[in-house]
Length: 56
Image (cartoon, rainbow, N blue to C red; front, side, top):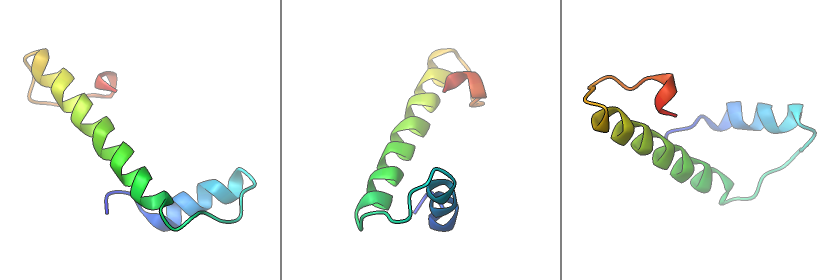
């Protein structure tokens, strides 16, 4: 698991949502992984081995 369940739940509560479905965290993790890999690709395409905020 990449993302922290309790932190996601805190964000949801701040936004006014009390519950999340059983598969929600799986999808959040998959989207997070895709975002990270896209940033890595951009950094490599720019000749860097360091991922930066601008890669997002």
